[in-house]
Length: 293
Length: 249
Image (cartoon, rainbow over all chains, first blue to last red; front, side, top):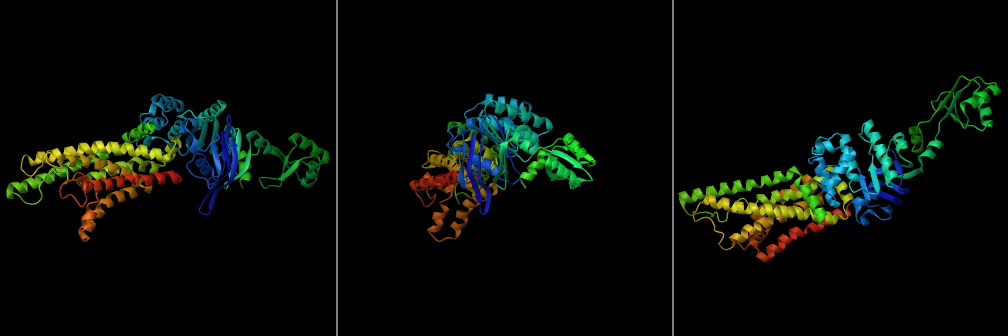
């Protein structure tokens, strides 16, 4: 479990994280969303004890990172997969990290197998593609078989196969009862992977909700266009619909709360001509942009 | 702690810079051989005059501390330059223990390599001198001690390099200080009035190693003071542990 309690980080005059509070529970994937510069990385670094909070606390399994007795076995992290020394082989890189946690070659071989890098284990990291580095970073996070995983933008640089592989891996890790916190600025990808979403903007909490609830709330609606728009609008509102202006800035109405069939029937009853009647799913990406505006 | 030492040993071993730096220390042998050869030729043609070769250790002495210092620099500067230090720090319990493990590894490597180099330098010089009365036998007072303390000086230099790189968090910065630091006493020693010039010139690591071995005319300080100053260079590591423990990574 990860608990962030009223966490604040100030650099000079810039408040990067402001009074942020949320929890990432075991057994589920928690998505940590925000635009670039929203404070995701700073928050993750504070959770991992790399940066000291100006105020507030960040706890892993109830204690601060620095108070963990065997950190590698409790928390695994991938912050930036490009942050490795290219001169080493993938195996030597992981082996050195493994030693620090009292682990040996066998564990290194296991994680290399798990991320699909066994065949390139003896090659120098300098020649790795971004996707391979990403897999290596995930291997390093998994080394100590930790109960808490913190991954900063793990999808970056992965090809579609890699993204699907990572999604399956993270879900299975969560299903084993682990806490998985991953950050991203890609809402759509996140809605497929995360069970719970924490959305921040300019260092502040915007949403802390289950993915399902957010999806339900930001469902699309039905776009209807009619030459008698005013009359139709009154009829629809009388039937309990919520109206919004046409998101594409045309002369249509965006209706939520009624199905396309009901809207058609109501239009007929009110004597309004209907020129267009389309069901639209709002993209989650739009919802995200709206929330973080 | 043993786990951390094993980890840092593997890191240092798997870094190509390590073998380059150790190979570069052989340049001190070449320098010694060349100097000993010149002095021998002078002796052959004109007899006594100038400094004798002695143990030969002082001929190329300024080079090894800089190179072993580099070894210490590279033990952490690459992690700062790439950002890998963050990954490393998430895996360890305490930052000062990490730095101590790094210090133990570079000190051990430099002590062994420095000792081998010191003996190799001594025997190279004596081989070039080839029995002329300008060399030094290990039985002479201070000779064996000088070889041993020169090796120990390498360990101090390596820890100093690690300290600089940790405090400065910059490879070029650490290199600059490492090269400029021994130059300072050399230059100042020429211009300052006595006894300041003597004191300042006695502060470099090779000079301290000779004073520690009680080599005659090696500098202003006795063995005890020299040992204290060398220990002081090593103790600067404390400043580095404070820096790494307090700063955001």
